[in-house]
Image (cartoon, rainbow, N blue to C red; front, side):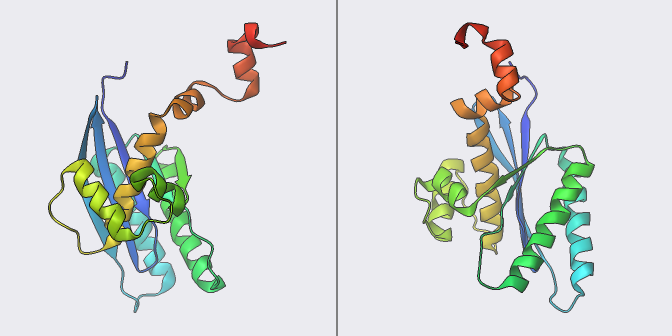
Length: 186
């Protein structure tokens, strides 16, 4: 049984506003530690903004020492340039996490909404209202990007603690399954 807390860093990537959230899980208690957004100036060069995203993720990792990293995958839009920029923002956040030795888990926006509200088509306000109830949070952050990041962290927590999530954590592919379950092979 795990005695040390699980600390999850959830990220909602963006090139102008990047949401981030840290939750701590001890036993059955979930405690939000931080929920904010990094607001980046549109007047800054794209590469400078990417550098700031990378620095912020590194700073958060140094401060909170997360054990897990979860990030929202970009949804597929029609504007190719926007998708490219969003993918770069996601990439530098992932690079910072990997550099710190964290494994990366990506969730689609639909999966995150489904995990929090039970409805993959829920809007940002519905997701936030559910998070407020689940975690007893009173103050609303300035940007929904921060609440989206909290939703990503909570989605990851639910995934880690689901039956399927536990099976995935204990097995490394079919060969491992067969080795651990020889009686189930015909």
